[in-house]
Length: 166
Image 1 (cartoon, helix red, strand yellow):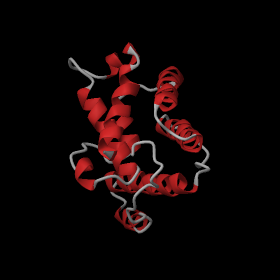
Image 2 (tube, helix red, strand yellow):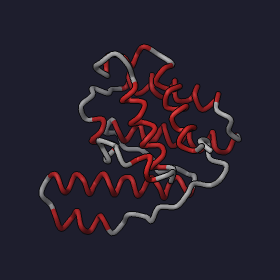
Image 3 (cartoon, helix red, strand yellow):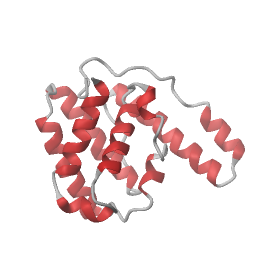
């Protein structure tokens, strides 16, 4: 059920506009939808088996191949907000996730972003950032830094039952 909700919401946000079509080669947005759903499942503590086939683990690395500027970020945020608004969420979850997507999208495009206010999302975001930093350190050959960063990874735990994908 959780993975299905992530897939439905990933499909909805990417299907809301033709704006994203030039970013993805091929005839469909299937790969992009699957990657986005896998990220959400992983990030929100879903079934690990549903995330094992991701090509990219680093959020920043997964977006490097695209030219994402303010216009693209704004378009994505507009469609993500519409998707959240249409999802069966309580207002607290909708607000927390909206804030998270606002801040994480700033990070993806290289802007400084505030940490999420929601405690659990903030902890998950810190783990994602540590993972991104560790992958960057590995790629740059900074093994000692990568090992130190690896110690920061939080143990996996499920997101609360009122999660938007439940």
